[in-house]
Image (tube, rainbow, N blue to C red; front, side, top):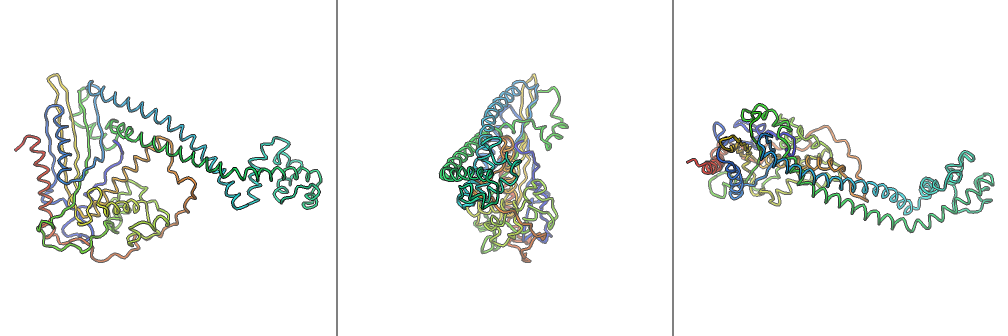
Length: 510
C-alpha cells in the first residue's frame, strides 16, 4: 500500500428520505435495495483480467468520469517462482535506486543544515550591523571572535583575574587610551591596557567584517537555497520510485488487508498464487437540467461547496454525529496562523471563523479554488455529482495443468451534493500529504519555513465554540425526496447500468 490509512466510509453520510438536512448535504445510494452497488467477477487466461481493467479505466475517461487511483497493493507467493522472481527483481532494482538517492540526499541535507547554521549566525550579525546595536556586536565579538585568541589572552579566559573585564568591555565606546578607560570605568591601569587593546581589535573587526558580512550572508543564502533546491529535486526524483516500491510491498504488511489475506480461501500455503488490489475513485457532474429532464429550479448562484455541516464531517463529527475525517488524519485539526487564515476563501465568505481556521479548512479552500477553475472534473455550474468507488481485486493461480487469472470489481455509485465530493477530495489530499510526510521522513528532512524570512507568530488559541457562523434554516440544495428520486436517481442508475453493461460486454456476457 502507498498509504497505510483506512478510507473514509462514505456510508456514514448516507441520506434518508426523512432527514432534516437534505437541503444542506446529500449522499444517496439510489434505488432499492442499493440498486447502484454490485460485485462482478471474471476468470480467464493470464492477462485477460488486466486487459479488462485498462479498458475499463480508459472507457470511464471517455464517458466523462474523472478517475484517480487512490491505493494499490500486491502479494505474490514464493511458490509462483517466475512472477515472484520478477517482482523481487523489480523491488531490488527500486531498492538500489532509492538507496543511492537517499545517500546523496542525506549528504545534501547535512550540508544544508551546516549552511543553515552559518546563515543564522551571519543573520544575527547582519541584523546587529544594520541596527548599529553595539551591545549585540560586542557580545558577538566576545563569544565568536575574541574567544579564539587563545587561553590566557581572550576575555573569557582572564575573568578569574579581573571578574568584571567582560562587563567593562561591554561599557566601552570608541575609547582607545588606557588612561581614559581607567578613569571612565574606575579600574586598574593593567586592566585598562587590556581593554584598550581589545577595543582596538573590536573596532577593526567591526569595520572590516562589517563590510564583508552582508556579502558573505548573501553568498551563503544563495548556496543554501541551491542546496534546498537540490534536495527538492532528489525528493521529486525519489517520489515515483518510493511510491512504486510501496505498492509492491506485500499486502499483508497493511492492516486493512492482512486479515482478509490470512483467512482468504484462495490464499493456500504452497500454491503458486498472486493477488493485486487497486482502489479507484471516479466522479462526474450531474447535468440533467441541460437535457430538459428536470422541472425543478436550481439556485441562481451555485454555493461554495464548503459549509458548516461538511466542515463538521471533515473535522469534528459532533453536529451530524459521524466519525470525522480528522479521526483518520488528526493534522486536519491543527490551527493555522490568523495571517494565513485571512487569505482563505472560506474565511472571506464567513464560513470559517478566522480565529478557528484549521488545516482541514485550508485543504478545503484549495478544493474550492479548483472548483472555481473547473479542474479535476469539478463544475461550478451544478451542485450535484455522481461519485463512484471501485475496488478491483486481481488474483492468479498457477497449477501443473495451466494458469488462470480472476478479476473482480466491487462498484458503488453515489449521488452526492458537491460538498460531499469536496470531503472526498480533501481525503485524497490527506493521502498525498501522508505520502509526502513519509518521503520527508525517509530522506531525513522536516517541513521548513522559507529561508531568510521571519517565522510566523504563534497561532492564537481559538475559542471553544465549534461554529460561530450563523446557519440559515434552509440550505442551498433541493430537499424534496420525491423530486430527487424522480429527477436524479434515473440518471445515476442509468450511468451505473452503463458501467455494468460495459464490464458484462468485456466478460463476454449478453
